[in-house]
Image (cartoon, rainbow, N blue to C red; front, top):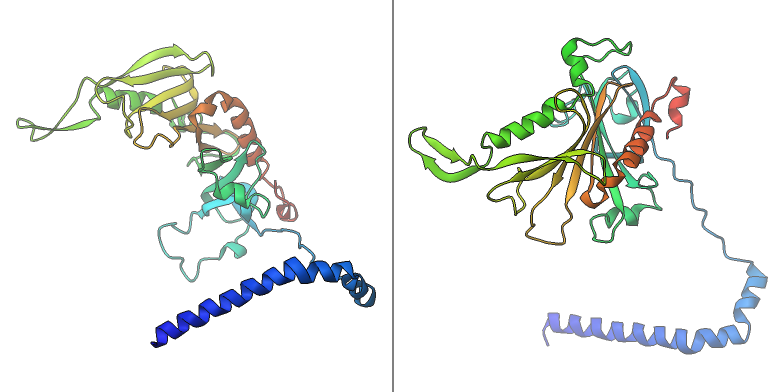
Length: 320
C-alpha cells in the first residue's frame, strides 16, 4: 500500500472512531450520567462553570469637519474608504507624514464620507446586524443604504455664496436638464460608422418624454422612449424630481429600467439632495419599488447626518 493510501485509511479509521464515540456519548453515556446525577454532583462540588462575559461593542470614533462643521462618526457607521480627508487622496498610498484615522481631529478638513445603515431602523453594522448586512443583496434581504456625503466647495457657514454656488447648493435642475438633453442629442452610440464625420453615428430617435406628476410619489418624471429602451442599459434611466426644471429642483432621482439579463436583480434608484446647513450634497441608492418612501428616507438620512455634528472635542466621543 502506498503512503497516500495508508494516510487515507488512517483518516477514515479516525473519523469512524470519532463518529462512534460521539454516538455512544450522546445516545448512551450522557443520558446515563444525567440519570444517576453525576452532573448535579459535579456542580455541587465545583460550582457552576464560569460564563464568558460579552464585552460591550464600542467602535472607535472618527473625527473631521465638513466645510467647518465638526463631525464625529462611530467607525462602524463608515463604509468603503470611510472619511476622505482633503490632504489625503483615496487613490494614493498614505504618506508616512499623514495622520492615521486614530490621530485625526476635528481640525482635519474632510471632502467626503460614506455611511452604511439599515432601513428603516438606521442601524449601523454591529455584531447584532452583521448577518443582515452580508445578506443585503438576497431577494428577501434587508435594505441597506450606502449614503455618500460630499462637501460643496465654496460654502461658508454664514450662508454667503456667489450666485453660481447658490444655484449649485440645492438646485439639481441643471443636472436633470443636462441628462435629458444629452439623450435627446444622441448619447446612445450604435455600431454604424458615419463616413462623413469619421465617427460612430448616434441614434437621434431615443429621447425623454415628460410624464407629468407621478400619483404615488408626487414627483415629476420623464422616461426614455425609442429603440432599445425595453432592455436595461446604463443610459436607460427613468428620471424623477421635485421642483421646476425651469427654476429650482431640490430632489433628483435616477431609476434603472428595462429588462435585465438576470431577472432576480432588483432595479434601484439613485437619490440626490442637499443639506444646506453643511453645504453638502447627499446621495444613496435603494430599490425602485420603495420609491414612494422617499420622504421618510430623506428625513431619516438627513437626521442621521445632522446628528453627527458636535460642538466640542468632549462631545465627539458620543455619536448618533
